[in-house]
Length: 160
Length: 160
DNA sequence: TCTTATTGACCATCTTTGACTATTATATAG
DNA sequence: CTATATAATAGTCAAAGATGGTCAATAAGA
Image 1 (cartoon, rainbow over the protein chains, first blue to last red):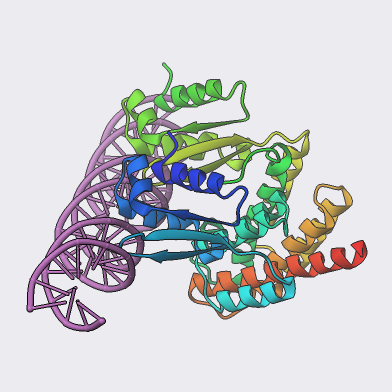
Image 2: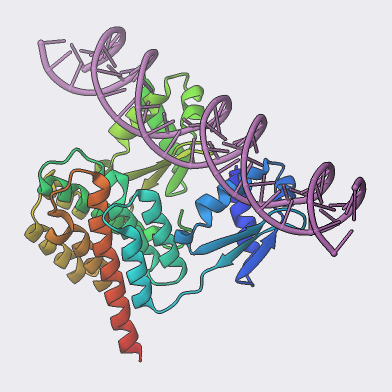
C-alpha cells in the first residue's frame, strides 16, 4: 500500500536518476496518478524541499511546467555554514530529518550515522517535560544507544 | 484462558518468527481481535519494549503503520539492558562519555559514530537554559552537524 | 488488596481533496 | 498593432479523512 505521495515521490526520483533536473506538467502527473493536482504540490513541499536538496521552479499559463532541480553540492564548509544558518536557534523535527536525508544522499554520513542523528533530534528524544539537564540527556543517550544496537541488521534496509 | 494481551503478543510473535521486523496496522489488528486500538499500544508497551528486546516505530496519518523490530545483536542485548539500567532517567556527561569510549573500544561503534554520540550528549549540546524544545533541538543538531563536517574534512585531508 | 488488562475520550500527525486565486499564452476585437 | 477576453496552467490554504498515541478511569485477575 505505498501511499500515493510515496509513489509520486518515487516516480519523480526515477525520472531524475540520470538528469539533475526534470520538467513536469502538474496536471498530467496528477491525472497519471488519478489525484488532485494540488497533491503534486504536497509531494513537492514535503519531499523535494530545499532542505531535501531540491529547488522547484515553475511557470503557469499555457505551456506551463514544474521543474525540479537537484542542488549540486558545493564546498562543504559552505554547506555547513548554510545549514547552521538555516537552523538558527530553533528547528523542528521535519527540517532536521530532511537535512539528514540530504546529508545521507550526498554520502556525507553513513546510514548508521544518519540514524544516530535522527535519534538525537527526534521528538521522542527531546519532547520531554524536562527540568534537569541530566534527565534530558538520559533520554537522548538512551535513544542513541538503542540506535547503535539496533543497526546491526538494519544496514541493508532502505531508510525511511 | 489466554488473556487478550497474551493472544495479541503471541500473534505478533508468530508474525515475527521469520523476519526480524513486522509492520502492522494498529486499527486492523485491533479489529481482528475485537478490541480497542489502544489495547495494541498496551501490548507493545508491556511485551515489546526495549527491555524485551524490541523497538517500536510508527507513523500516523494515511498509510500509517506500526513497525516492531527485534533487536538481535549477538549477545549484546544484555549489554544494552545493563547500560539502559545504569543510565536510568538521569546521567551525567562523564558517565556517558565513559560508556561511549567503551562502545568504541569494543568496536560497537566507529570513531565517527562515537563522536556523534558525544556531540549529542555533551554539556555544550544540552546545558542551555532552554524552555522550548525546538531551541534545545537546534543546539543538539548544530553540534551533530559540526561533528559530521569536522570528521568529513579530516577524512578528506587524509585521502588527499 | 494489588497488579494487570481494557476501554474510551481526546490528541497529534500525515495525506488527500477542492474551492478559490494567480499567472501566462493565445485568440479576438478595435 | 494594441487591448482585452479567454483558455490553460500552476499555487494556496483550509477542511476532511486516515491513521496512530496518551492517559486516566474502570474492570478483571491473582
